[in-house]
Image 1 (tube, rainbow, N blue to C red):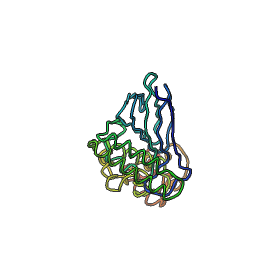
Image 2 (cartoon, helix red, strand yellow):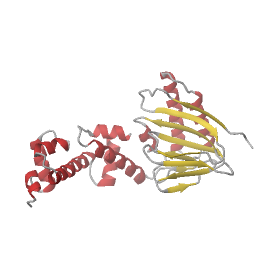
Image 3 (cartoon, one colour):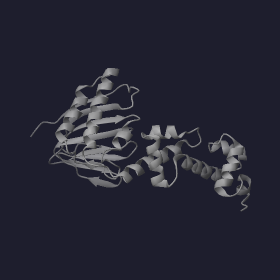
Image 4 (cartoon, rainbow, N blue to C red):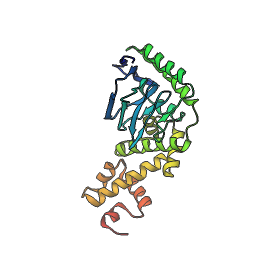
Length: 273
């Protein structure tokens, strides 16, 4: 039986690149070795070269084995564990950056399909090993690691077409979460796209597919919903409600509120149709 081993690198500093490697390495796991349940703040890709294990995400359990890859999405609870009889050996890379989501959108991976069998498995393994070999804490190393990561993602893109609807819905949900967490601030479509990791045009398509509206329309409607809650359940002045919901101009807020709700903010608070 091959002895267990682990070689890993974690970037102490995260350079300002569009694609950033957070960590990388390869490991032969001991039986039942696992991680989680927990949440990562970045994408995490594993490619299995031998053995098998289990991967739990979104209430489902997958059993990937040699020749398969599995992907963890940011801010998503996961748990993975090596098999007790035939523990896996894998290569991995953790990464993020504005380009990360856009590149992954071109692969077959999605939240519904987080496991796949790459067509060029050995080439993917080599690309992941190259990321590890290029490791370093300086800026040139970060650029080199990002380059090998792009090569790895390019190989995954060749593994089959991702179902467009899955990808669009994934990024629409990510954009919606960002809006819900930041609606009271000055939010632009460019910021939503950047945080989601896709282009403005792709984000527009995603929101149209998932919500039948544009990102800006979704933002406006969500702000109005929050304003309506404040009007009904607080005694805050209308101007304060407008500011709290992300509207800088109370007169503009009143116009938009009437357009969306059919009555003025004051009439809505009074319960008048």
